[in-house]
Amino acid sequence: MIALDQGTLFFAFPEIREQLRLLVDRHVQSVLTSYVLPGDRDELVDELGSMRPFWSLTRRKQEHLIRKARSVTDAEIEVLLRKAATVAAGLNTASPPQLTVKFQHPPRPPDDAKIYVFPAGLEELPLSPTTDFPDTLPTSWLKQTAFLMLMNPGDPFLVRFTANYPFAVKVAVANVDRVTGEPPLSSLQKEPRNYLVVSGESKANGVKERSFVLSLDAGCAVNEQALADQKIGRIDFQICPLRVESYFSEEVAHSIPKTLREFFAWFVYGPSISAKQAEMEREHQAWQSDPLTDESGAIVLGRKFEDEFDPQYIDELLDLREVADWDQTQSRYCSIHLCDSSVWRQITGTNPPQPRLTAHTAQRLPKSLFIIREPFFL
Image (cartoon, rainbow, N blue to C red; front, top):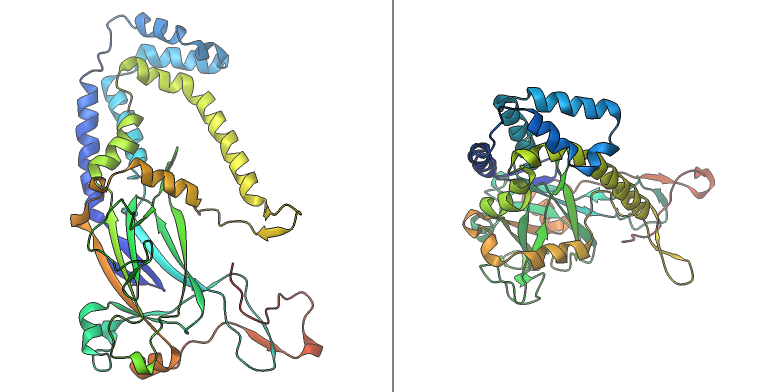
């Protein structure tokens, strides 16, 4: 399913959610067969005492675990296992496995003598479904293009991919593969690699969405002379999800204790592991908040978006998986034509939306406002 909502493209895979739910049920039932509660619960208490971190817990937590070992039932264990597997699989949220795509750019001021004040951040580029303009679009566009996007030739822009599940993404611009620089292939390949990876990140409370940013320029934007060419000015996406079985074995199966001893070790080792993870998260956030500087100490790059993956981490993800791990039979395809303002007006019959900015004379310019005289791009 591909949908457009307020300028954002959604590639949703609800069928993966249902497949994950079935795998969770099957796996939990399989694991439960190895859980045999002893008739003498003192055996479980002795197991707790044999774990060194148990003696580092507070007295209150020790007593709580001992009571749990003496009273826990099969039904309570099943509930806890299902909850853990559900969270690890990302089934504790309303969103299905999905990838979103946003197109953003720095606002461009009009070419006049005025000084303009811009809102903070990047602006999202407008998208419109081609089905809204069946009478004004070239026939070739209607057959192969899903959306139109307004873009001026030469303007740089970002494509921001955000996902809560692993996806391989192929991007072709003007019939050239964005990764290899060669004509695009119809399938994924690893050598040379012709796809990007966008993935969520497993957290203790579920799967967190993460982003990957790809920078492009609009040199292929369609003008009136190139209006009839269906390749010029087109961006083609292929979104391919990770196979459900691969995802389950990587992210979910290991989160379920396989034995009763491992089940109780969950509660014994959990506090120390959580403390270490919290410390690592604090260090990571501190690192993200520091700007990147060169040898002279000058700032060369500001703070990254909080949800943005490092390219090095993306490369590590690619190295861990083979092409066969991606389910290309479930791929979603989408094509977008870039139009300059004249073509946009010709097709839609409307003027291009204007950037949200305010013009000021030099004498009346508020001192506290952020001024941009020319477009910039980081």
